[in-house]
Amino acid sequence: MSLNYHHLRYFQMVAHEGNLTRAAEKLNLSQSALSTQIRQLEDRLGQSLFERRGRALHLTEAGRIALDHADVIFAAGQELVATLGQAGRARQALRVGSLSTLSRNFQLGFLRPVLGRRDVEVVLRSGSAGELFEALAALHLDLVLTNQPPPEDALSRFIVQKIDEQPVSLIGRPSQAARDLPIAEALRAAPLLLPSRGTSIRMGFDALVDRLDIAPQIAAEVDDMAMLRLLAREGAGLAVLPPIVVLDELSQGQLTEFAKLPNLTEAFFGVTVDRRFPNPLLKPLLTGAADAARTRVHERETASPQD
Image 1 (cartoon, one colour):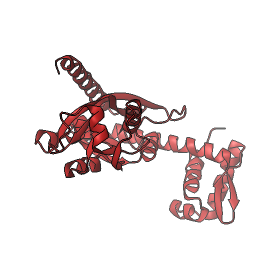
Image 2 (tube, one colour):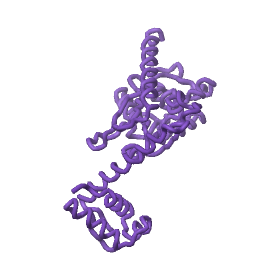
Image 3 (cartoon, rainbow, N blue to C red):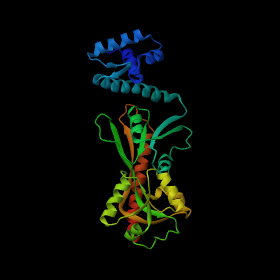
Image 4 (cartoon, helix red, strand yellow):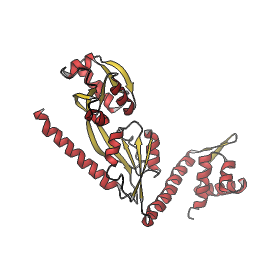
């Protein structure tokens, strides 16, 4: 006997609502009819999907497994309609999620090949890593840009591609005379603006000052690159960040790159999921970004002996 997908849809609604009354109202069904549909699904699966605690319904272990599958099944249906529906449209949507603390300049550089195209609509969403990876797994996003790869999880089907790696430097206002100081002296003498603990840059920086036996003066710890950029512009200290974050300020002379920090880089990743109908805009974007990153690394390595 095959699965009744109407029953599965009703179950999904009840599971997300956590309340039979609200789910029945949204489905335009009576509570008794909805209860009957859920019982028929439980009979088909041979498992209880809910347990009642007071007036609330809570998923059993079998219910959580069933909900995971239901979400994937119905998200795949939405993906199919959205993807095949593009054939008759003049514009194709590219749905990109980006970590809220990620460099805006990096995001802009990555998306530049599709910005302004008449046949492409770029939909941008920012958020926490958990929110974005959940939306990606549910097929609500085509791609997540991040500097924090997702946790390894065999159920997630995440595909992680490293698309860029930027050096990290000591950056501040020109009046903060650190240009002629050795790195160890600059790190010891100047108040520093640092990314928050737990980030890849901060972990690399902490390892660097430990090797140099330095106790740095920390003026601020910030989890947002945009705020770190503003603090550097205000002269609140020397910032530890990739120059790409402050490209405009460096080109205009508002900020100066005093020194590259040895063996310290920030990696950027593009995360997708295995899809039956992948967005055709993604492959050239990811390939182009990775090729450009390799070219920049080669240019830096070629130029470094002459520095």
